[in-house]
Image (cartoon, rainbow, N blue to C red; front, side, top):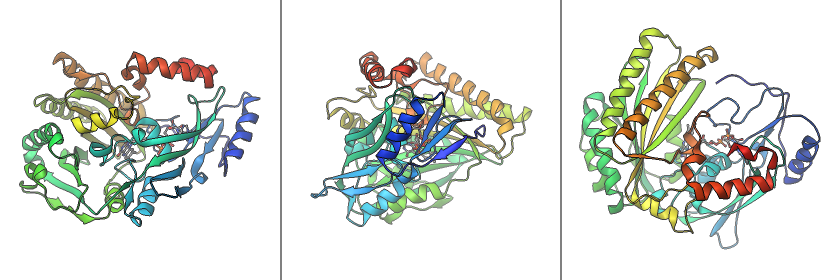
Length: 407
Ligand SMILES: Cc1cc2nc3c(=O)[nH]c(=O)nc-3n(C[C@H](O)[C@H](O)[C@H](O)COP(=O)(O)OP(=O)(O)OC[C@H]3O[C@@H](n4cnc5c(N)ncnc54)[C@H](O)[C@@H]3O)c2cc1C
């Protein structure tokens, strides 16, 4: 995205540092932004032009409770480091599937994990937040400095990715639809399916799969594992290695945008989405030449067990309570040159509008918009439901009155 240049970058080493900084900033017209892992996928998400960037990279503690049933995580810590630390103790916490995302940015937006069918979203497993409240800052509510999260026992897992030829397209789409419906049969299984374009036509399909026990090729994955593949990295491993590997395989440019919407799992819509995306990208490329252009269309299931886990601790703040399985559709584009931003964003916005309109016309759109993968033009809180929205407004008005209108 656009390259923003803050006037200064400050890395607090303690909560006291943050308090002092915010007190000083409140007395000035100086704007500021907060960054943890820096993976927020739009300009201004976690950076600022001509202001102060508060970088939480040094707030990175990992401290076990005496009984090891919970863990305190500094907000700037990265999941790869957390998982590697916990693997040594045969424990796990619920963060993001991919490991190079930070604790706080992801947990504040939900955090979908390969353990979510068993234990819910990352945010459902936060026991407490330590927050320095803002009065007039760039985000809502405040800066979270520490999260206390639940730990779970963790054995080895079976996981990795398989690459298929495009010829398997229809079978793979049908497979992810069935997998999503069957989540209730085996909540230890997790997967997402991506079709990926780079340097040429849509090239291949990549399901990322994980079974959170050391069982090779459990039946729920047979629709995929029985197909001929191009490459296959599925293996028994420690949990953290699989999260780290899912990042290592990515080939991405410098600029990035994410867009998303949610629909009720359906056998027809993903085929239509695929056609609309393929046609849209092909038409775009007849007009524009964009260096480093990549597209990933990702289907991420929200099976019934995951939705139910989210409800068990008194309800889900994100308003997800469907009786039927859901599917997150994620549209991710990357490119090299900031000068191409406008045309790429226009493409993304128009394809998301088109595919979402199709879901609406089939009456299977679901209002939830996953904050962690939403573009700045989307408004995730609208999908949380009026009750949850009102709670957020009240909290924002109390702790962050100058920007409460953002919700
Ligand atoms: C390669 C990749 C893989 C991903 N995989 C997953 C996945 O498996 N599951 C999933 O759920 N999501 C995933 N995501 C999405 C990711 O969770 C979001 O992009 C998330 O916002 C990134 O958090 P961050 O801290 O790294 O980014 P940042 O850009 O640092 O932060 C994101 C936002 O949160 C705010 N923020 C950060 N820290 C704080 C704080 N302590 N207090 C207040 N506000 C704060 C920032 O100001 C910014 O607005 C992935 C993203 C990428 C790029």
